[in-house]
Image (tube, rainbow, N blue to C red):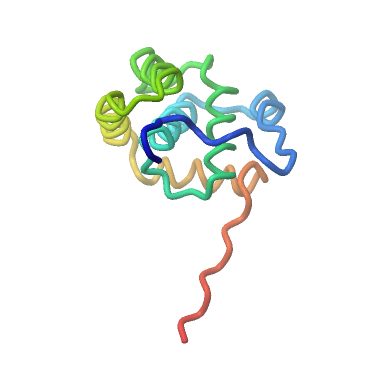
Length: 133
């Protein structure tokens, strides 16, 4: 990403993220995870393929009104600011917000959240790594 903190375009493949979020009983920890991944996407540090990052941003949009356990208004304001501004000067603020968010969510909680999304078909299944030759 050069000079922008914008998120990828809308998700591909007809994933009904909004519908899934409305039908799924998401807990506040899941909302925290969605917030943290949105910050990571906007920070440019997300290792997900662009279509998965777009799905995660759509998921954030679908759940941002729900209560979170550990993250809140500050995180939502940072995401809104990063989306609105396409200048490099917000990069450090987004980075700091992302790091803070990631320290508040345990790795097992985040891994379980992503695994749930893959099991539910929101994110595509992980492909097995190619065998080393």
